[in-house]
Length: 173
Image (cartoon, rainbow, N blue to C red; front, side):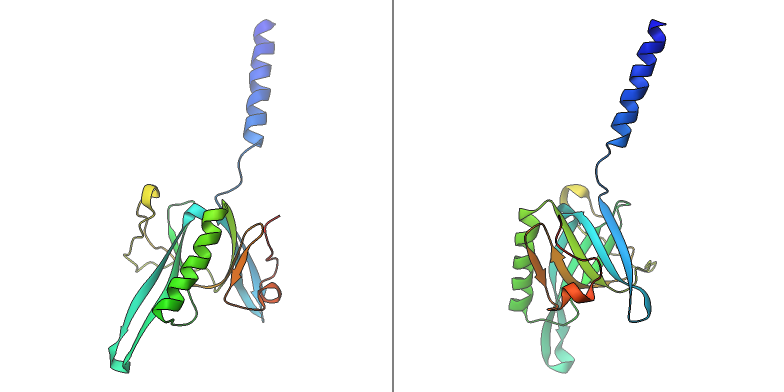
């Protein structure tokens, strides 16, 4: 009888521990926009799962030198989803965007992103992204377009109408 009570206690304790699991590392909600299927993505994730860069594009043929802002998101399968700015930027503008977003990433453990485009696998990429202690996982998806990032109290957006254009997107509670 004593053994049965002991086993019952252990079983109940395990049930409580399993039911108290932590929040998912990455949560994606997809929305329709303008008749297109699932082309708006609201992504909630740990801020340590994001790496940012300014990539230099040599457009010498056009007599232009420009940069692209790129954000890399690490998912729970150790795969990378690239996110790019919708416009080519001057180096100073790209660096300023990184700085503004980094302030949010450094201040908050969890952030919410509004991204445009459909999530599609990219089978031809052989690029890897350095996430420091988390390793160098491969890029496995086509690029999405960056729109906004929010945390509990701070937001940064390249789209002034982000609250209207990204359904379900708001500051974290």
